[in-house]
Length: 77
Image (cartoon, rainbow, N blue to C red; front, side, top):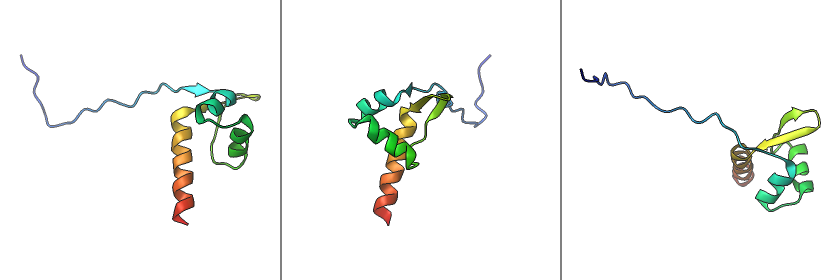
């Protein structure tokens, strides 16, 4: 018995796995200081996940998207 194709496309969902990193790890990845990461957070450019009240973590993919959006918005003005 064969599998019939009904014309429905089945797409794999994007992985729900997130690579969450600390402020220090994000700073090292971006090549900036931890203070620069804190300034970007305070300015609302990047948004952390609060794992605990004193433990912010950043998703690397989301941070790169947020920084790209910020850069594009700056140049569109």
